[in-house]
Image (cartoon, rainbow, N blue to C red):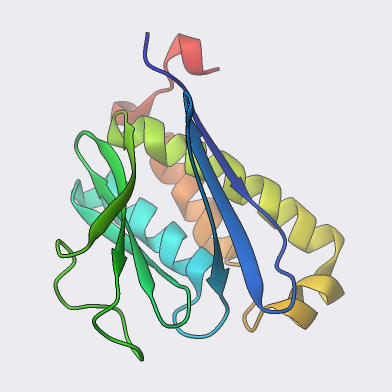
Length: 163
């Protein structure tokens, strides 16, 4: 049986948001900056594209001065560093040092991220002043609803073991 992917996104604090990924004994944790592309929005958009268009898709996470690419592909997810540019995401998403790798179908990986984003969205709604004080943009509620609809599509029904 495949190890379940654990995804956690914490409420931002002073312009930084922690992402933690774990599968089996492998763990990755890093803070995204609110400077540059909006990470929660980047993540939701990449997952919507993954389910609509298929892999590969990428979401960018800015760490000042290093970029991390969350590369969604047909076998799962890889997280790679990209340090060749400062002000914008790299133009060659395949280049970079591998930091973390997860196996699983695109729909399964997307579901795990969706659950983490849903928890984060609930916290952002409960503490809107905290969210806006520590992050530059509103939480992407409307796009998260679209991601939920994409996950409910006929080809993305949850596995019984995942429920």
